Length: 194
Image (tube, rainbow, N blue to C red; front, side, top):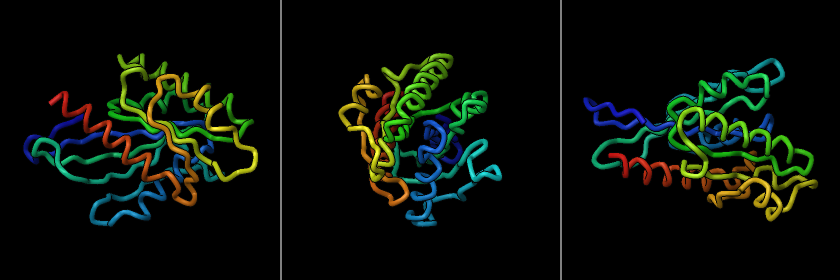
């Protein structure tokens, strides 16, 4: 959280975290395409030639007020590929809330678990923990034939019983539910700090 007292703005950072190719960028692209352009900033995407995010996606949205101040939510994604681990840490710096995007396909469970453990390790290095930090889980790709049951995903990934949502990000299903939930959790968390 960064407060610009002169402009009476609170800048808040939400990071979409998950394994490679799970749908993090697709979430931001869908959000950006559906919101009123007057509420959003530019969607900045850095991609490799294979069309995978190399560093981060970023967009800014403005909604409502928090204790008289205008909140600006900055949405980022981290690269899912393991070899960008240092980039993940940099992007997490100053994070206020996380949407963990899990790939629902059965053969991606190990990648989901590894990435979730990586997230916890990175948060712990910053003095936080998933146990007390604002975060939600989005179970993406629910439209594919080889998906794990939500019960099994919950058992393997949601050990702190945070809000969870089923999604098909490419169609927008569950995308705004996840975003609204994390914004609400972040706002509640920030109001306690102000």
